[in-house]
Image (tube, rainbow over all chains, first blue to last red; front, top):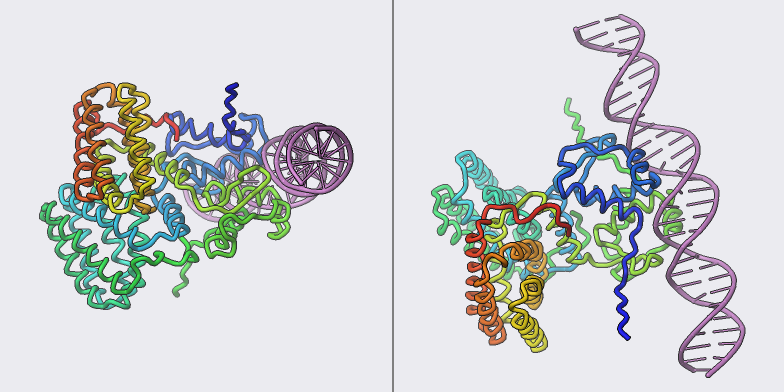
Length: 246
Length: 246
DNA sequence: TTGCGTCCGATTGTCAGACACTAATTTTTA
DNA sequence: TAAAAATTAGTGTCTGACAATCGGACGCAA
């Protein structure tokens, strides 16, 4: 005999509702920004109870496909990168990824970002980039501030590439890695200096439109980072305690 | 006067519950695999109704922090990569990312994966990799099958790196890109041949432990892919219709 | 003992109906 | 006409309930 018993997945009502709405969002029937009917109306439409609708909506809301600017208003929206980043970071945290893992990936994403940025950055972005850098230089003895500024510096570069795939891919990695920087910073003070220098070069290369150079300096910068991590003996350590939130 | 009124976020009960449980999961109070109390019990614990608990749970479930192997059993678990991948892919779809964006990122992740794999692959994995490849060779005239096998090939390589960060970062990108392959495949038949050859080289390099070579071939492979996309005139086209589901 | 069918309780998915509170809207008032 | 008040709609939460089904316990046969 050859009876195939694929595990048929039961479809709960709330799941079906989420699925159905999602489908309509994805195929463009409902566009981002558009408003959705109230819960009662939805319940009637689908022929279920409000509770059931709510569970479904909760799911979409959590997926970032819909959101409530005010509790009263429910509208379709494009998933925000931050929401995805948060989830991804949390997942990585739970998986206890090591600094090495993070670094290996950053080692390719950050240079790529720098490279692409050099070719696409606009004049306004140039001045903003310079501004961020200036802020970092000004705060170079303030470890706190630096820890906060560094990720912003790199994220900004990534954003100038306008490559949303890159932005989404690197964000969680960068978040965790640079957060790890917080642990390294106190140990390796010299690194702060080198960092400023590297940033300097990156900024100049990007603004000059020299993609190769920007990439090279970005790579060096991340390599440097790795040395600091190593010196601090954190290479194979989980990037952070899971207690931290995102 | 200097009264700072930071917009205190209203905390809905269901949100608080999700948050609280999540916290306990993240800080290790409840470990993956452990079972959670039933809904009624949870409701009592938090002093709310079952409906409220359910909405909260739905959130965690959706986050991949808990899941139900059977509807009756609710247990803590590590976020599954697939869940995150699906979300990320969906987001990218809605953002209508272009093939160019995907390709640019794949251009660094895939070679990295090949490189790392070469240094870490085990004997069992080698034979499995060879098996997948053999399957592809066997199915080289079956476009359908190839489209299905190709992503598996690359994902498998990524998995042998054991770098979860890389795995998570590249998965959504690869999914979309190789899915785009489905659109290109019919147009560019020659590419299928070249693909097999490239895979061949990648497999050999990885199994021989030659990281550099593996990386080089992976890069060529992705470059090839790009040519095919270009030839098909899809470079700046959104990687796929948003109607597709994930 | 092992395997199998049967029964019971526990728990879930879903439902119905209700109420307080607040944002949005309309109406009234100054 | 603009501010204030009243109305309304819609959400967040609750109570209470019911059928389906899953997890076992139990008992019976091989």
